[in-house]
Length: 109
Image 1 (spheres, rainbow, N blue to C red):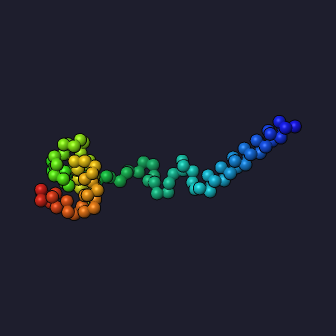
Image 2 (cartoon, rainbow, N blue to C red; image 1 turned 90 degrees about the horizontal axis):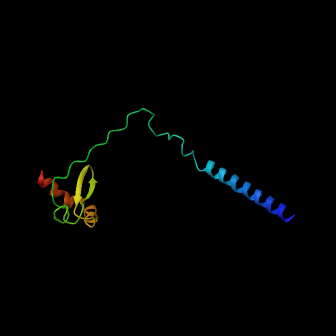
Image 3 (cartoon, rainbow, N blue to C red; image 1 turned 180 degrees about the horizontal axis):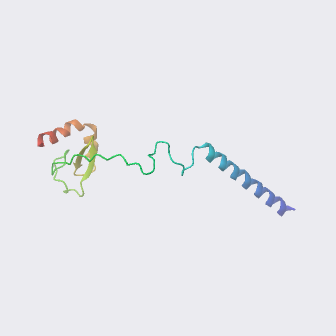
């Protein structure tokens, strides 16, 4: 009797959890494999990516250190312009006041 009750309770619990999972996934929106409405039709050409303007300096735009002197330079694209830093610590300074540093690029041109 105990075994039958345990099997019945297990089966009932599993049915409840499976039923809840199906309701939740149906309510959460379209299936993952369903195409998005905004996605281009199959075979449609993708929008061309605009290449960033290359960085003309061989030094960090923030610190003035030679690129590569502190490891691999950090590359960032700001409004279509590639910018390079000697290290990751220079990036926040640039992002606070980009106009202050972009003047260096304008002077190079």
